Image (cartoon, rainbow, N blue to C red; front, top):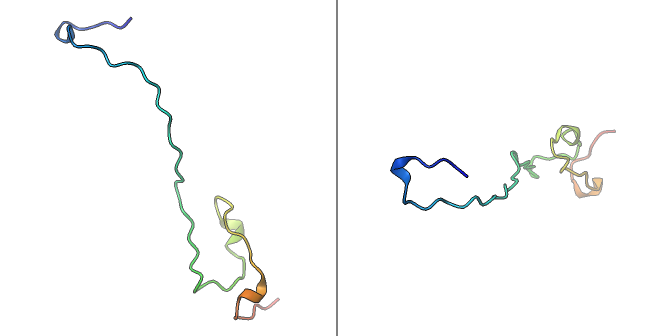
Length: 65
């Protein structure tokens, strides 16, 4: 049982209700598709592995080998 100070006597205690922490991403990756050339240089640097390469024929800009 908790120690209750004199000035708090008569005030009901709040119940101990465990709250679940919500997990939110700290960062959100955004790729500007208008500036993307499909070079895939960003893929290894993505901190959450959310960038996936797409087919080369999607891009009009030729990518040198």
